[in-house]
Image (spheres, rainbow, N blue to C red):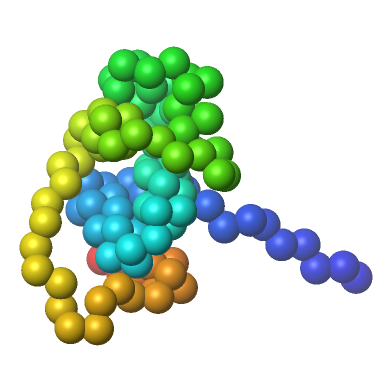
Length: 119
C-alpha cells in the first residue's frame, strides 16, 4: 500500500494576528530574502490573494509575480504588501550570532500552531 503525503502549507495555520507576526518575524530573522518573500506569500494566501492585491494597490497577477521564484521586488512593493497584511517593519539590534537557520522558521510555525490547537 502506498503512503500518501500532503504538502505542508503554512497558510493553513496562519489564522491569528499573533501567529502571522511571529511567522514573518522568524522569516525576517533568517536574513534570507527568499524566506521572507515565501512567508509573505503564505500570509497573503491565508488572507486571500485578491484582497491583499487590492489592498496593496497591485493587480493579482503582479502580486503573484512579486512572489515568484527569482523575483526581485522593490522595497516600495514589499512595504505595500506588508501594509495590506496589517504588518509593519521594525528594526532592533541583532543579537550576537546573527540569523537563525531557515529550518527554525518552519519549526517555530509548527510549534506555534500546535500550541494554539492545544489551548
